[in-house]
Length: 324
Image 1 (cartoon, one colour):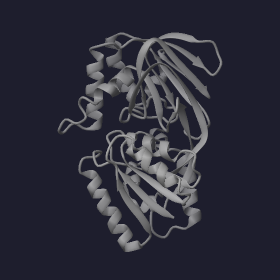
Image 2 (cartoon, helix red, strand yellow):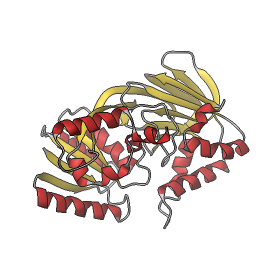
Image 3 (cartoon, one colour):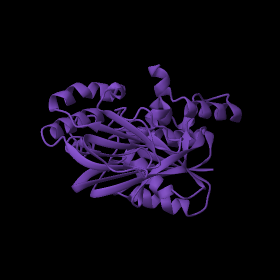
Image 4 (cartoon, one colour):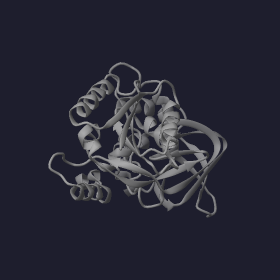
């Protein structure tokens, strides 16, 4: 097994240097085949992952960056059964792995190398694939506006997202969409936003789709009805913690396909990547990619213990266990 670490040098500021040092030291002490590759421009990770996958060699590819780096890695690796993909959360959001609990495990090279892969779904949007969520409306506008702030000194991913929300809050917050769930009639709705989710979190830790499961073969479609600006302010705390499900403005649908359209172009986001158009179709791709889960502990484990730990993490996400 060869381990390839695709590093986004922009993500995580100096954190990526610390992780790369950990990788070099670990393999020097323990042996094994590995390579560290740095991305140089947007989309480069897709090219690297695809070129590696096309060799046919059995590989583990680790996306070392934020959700955007993981997005590129799975788009490059999709369709190649010889490749498993992992995530080293060096970015500002790191939302997909929140489903599986403690992100520190994903930053530990020994836990990663000794981990096992589970098969997860992805979402297809046009010719692209996302592993976490596709969203449109105020949330997507906030993500687009977040770009204005996330490179400011001392501004973390969470702070940048809140600044993006505030900036968006001063502008348009109501969006008119036609929403088609599977093959049902269109729902015409004024929304704050619409989320087609494969997993639960987005926006740097907002639990927008608490019932999503990346292994159930379904999209969790969440819509939030349009409300006043004052009510939005009251909603944010509940939305962050996944408590908005008890509100009458919350709607959710389990589906295999969700279509979204509007009278004019709207901004939508694929795992943090900004796109635009006046209609999109999101469909679930079942069992799309093998995703590497790090082990809970290291040292003294056997393969059965690793498999058991992985299955436990997959069935009972640590984030849910902590909330019960």
